[in-house]
Length: 348
Length: 103
Image (spheres, rainbow over the protein chains, first blue to last red):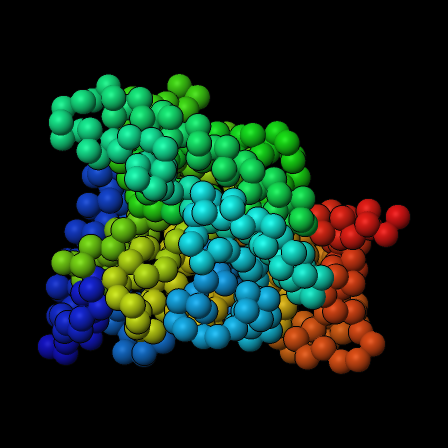
């Protein structure tokens, strides 16, 4: 029987039989369904995914009319990262004029709110110039990144040093202190960039440091939304599961540790988020079929439980995209099509 | 990777009506279907035309709301956004701030 050319979650090529791909799809959706207590993909969805992986074409795409909105994280920094010598303004014009970007995002190279706050006086004039010469909606974005608030870089004791010493209450107390600093920085930067004319503020890689990180961002969103009711706020997550690094934090009476995307979005909505971006981590030991089925299962449940637009994270290492610096077109385009057509997304 | 997603599933930005549909998600929290229908009604085109770069290039030219190939004496940048705000019936933050600055 003819083998199907596909890849593992690290991007390496693997040739599987049709029954092996089918098995991976079933196991991927089962894994997500069991973890999050959500419905697995239907037989029809699994068959569509199987056809997608059986298709020998290098690149695939959604049916005409099913296109969605693309939003970006760390937008302008991507050019610097690959050593393309263009300014932030020029890179936004490249997104606008050459990459077919529906929305754009400007960010500081050190893509977190804490370092960004120190250079707002440099960022704001560039952002204001960009707004004068570009047309698509323009976000300012950065990561909450609570890790930056620990010593020696920040003012707080490091909970990762306290926990192994058995200092549980001290570790919790320092995370609560980190939340206060992070909320202040996110509100400060968000306010200045909105007053500079931003169409939206993006909180990217939210909850990377666990439940305290998530809570800080929800609180910042709440404050910003109260201050600027018209502000568009996008919240992109860092993984499918909120790590309980504190373990006892709640928002609106809901314990944050252990929440999966379909529950995360409920709290994001309550806080005032306009667009939510679930993230599902790619497992490098499993095939792309397994990872895509799993990511689509989590994401579809999130879409079905949401009243706001959902833009899933489908960058390197999330959403079924392999963990490699050069994600292959065959894998990425299959994730793109599967997420939109089966996950019923509003954007990516 | 941006290019792959853009080709596989993106609306096409200002080559089409992607930026306009995005504005409805951002300003009114509309889901994709509702946002596309809203923009199509304002532009007086069909929903399937919204992601067609040839149709939309002509529509954008007629409405003077900015095109990829910007010719002389047509709306670009902020002036295109003034027209987009009026066309879609939405508030655009930088447009409002521009108005405040020239009062």
